[in-house]
Length: 78
Image 1: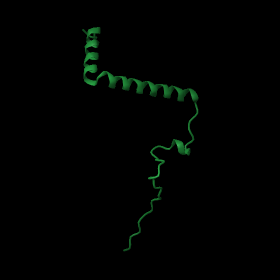
Image 2: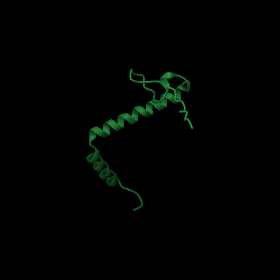
Image 3: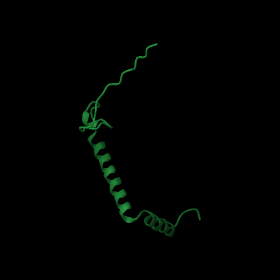
Image 4: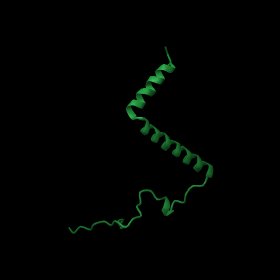
């Protein structure tokens, strides 16, 4: 009574497949596998990327539409 039997797990699996579909579950599984593999490879390598490496900067686009500016404070006249 305290645990779930194999029939309970099969019913849960059937409901998940019906809700999400096999193609979406396959994509999620392959994405998860690739992420785990990348994590394991990163842990095996043991080297961290340099913090100033432009290839490792997060959120910086490298296209023709990117504008690099420096923010300055606006001076107000009183």
